[in-house]
Length: 421
Ligand code: ADP
Ligand code: ASP
Ligand code: MG
Image (cartoon, rainbow, N blue to C red; front, top):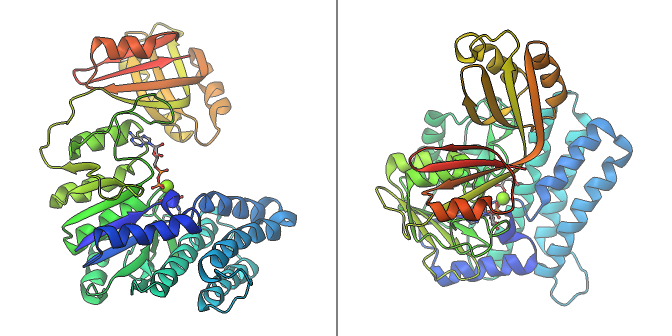
């Protein structure tokens, strides 16, 4: 059994979907389970729908229509090659039914719970994409079954970031997933004890592939990307990024932890536990080796790896009464950070001062600062960049720091982190 995962970029339009079929034909699809994300930026578009549902009802229908139109164009490209815009292929009807179901949910829903509604709505991105792709593959002779992943991936009801119930998931998969056929299923989705839809967190389709691999004892997982594999830096932010041929699970976990957005952080642990290799490959050059993530592999090539997180906030505190930070104040500081849902990227302390670099995801900075100022002398830099280099050397640090103002630096044996303005 092998698991393939195709992300948003690999199914962003009709040509990309045709290319997905080419990938399957090129590398083979025996004993394969295919996990697919929503197309392109459709999840972001559904986030607008949800926001309109709660805050701007007047814009709700037009935001849904945008998404319907986007998928309709893809349906015409795939199933109406003569351009008569006839909607004869059954795929049109199936997609229409899904959008009717969505509209119906929005009409009858009484729940004011944003996260609950979010999951019920955003999931249509994956439901529609897999419906279209499964029908397209069947239409060109790649026979497959459309599988509803919500029947297999069981979670709690922590909507938007649901936790997998491994026992129930394992038992559902072992007892009723037919693995003899080619299966096409959704990434990112699960269902709670009452069978309401849940999601596993943004970019969670990689994690779905890992959950399925774990429960099926798969031989491998392949994530198909618009890059040649895992690179030693994000090519959007660094020139001359270099392909990493081989990396260990541990290294991949570290890179994901520090913010390399190429693999979802939760993906690695289930694979590592069963020593299932992860391949990250290019959907444009499917025969190239890409990156292999596996056990005990030394980094090849042995080169510094760069990660950047932009738009972070650096807060430095010192006690007003000269009390020692770690002994007397740290739990209160962390209490406030937790209360304001700040994601902590880095901390550094001395006797009477403390610096923390945070990701202000939920826009709670003002209130946090107000409360800190009651007790500490506070300086705050917004809009700073946090750079991390794994396996650094002198020249990589010099290269990074050139033309930047360094606000803070922290070195351990394998990792250096630099905050710059
Ligand atoms: P998907 O279509 O699977 O959701 P993403 O867009 O989430 O794919 O991830 C692919 C992108 O990740 C690449 O286009 C690249 O810009 C970015 N990226 C960030 N860090 C790395 C890295 N270290 N190696 C490769 N790509 C990276
Ligand atoms: N469609 C979801 C997202 O964009 C999940 C994924 O693509 O992995 O976050
Ligand atoms: Mg993605």
